[in-house]
Length: 228
Image 1 (cartoon, rainbow, N blue to C red):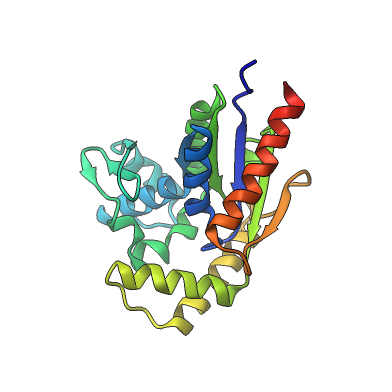
Image 2 (cartoon, helix red, strand yellow):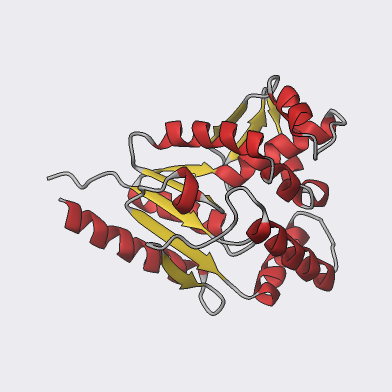
């Protein structure tokens, strides 16, 4: 009997390893990976490129009308496009990173992107990561994971990633930015970052990527067995 194609929601704060882990989990189970964070980053990038006031919801929505976000397979990273423009690298630059929480706090933007994300997940067999997937986007997901790690550890990870991309931001500045983003994400009025009541907490601070993936894979496998 074929195993059920599940919806897997992975939430957590910035640089907890969500995207990296979600991609590997999706690959292991043959699921589709949806990077919701990249969608908010794409809107942020697009608005900034068009000199839009990022706090003006109506202006951002107007700019979004000319934006089509799409994903394509890539190695090692999934490619992200704004219309026909490859923005994979651009949306990971510090200017976008430091402004995405402002865009993510706009109710109008969240409504539009949430609808798109739910449509993508309808058939199951999907891994989606973000900050409110298990609580708001996919509240009925069969598997919910909440990844956490200390701010110091997340800053070290972000620093290592940035160095590989040629971005040299001081470690202490990165930790301060991460802590500020945590505060913004957890205190925003619309869909704040919070652990769903039925989510499994996984502290990745002392764990390798492979260990985190193995732990989540075990949770998914058990859920598949219980739903057959």
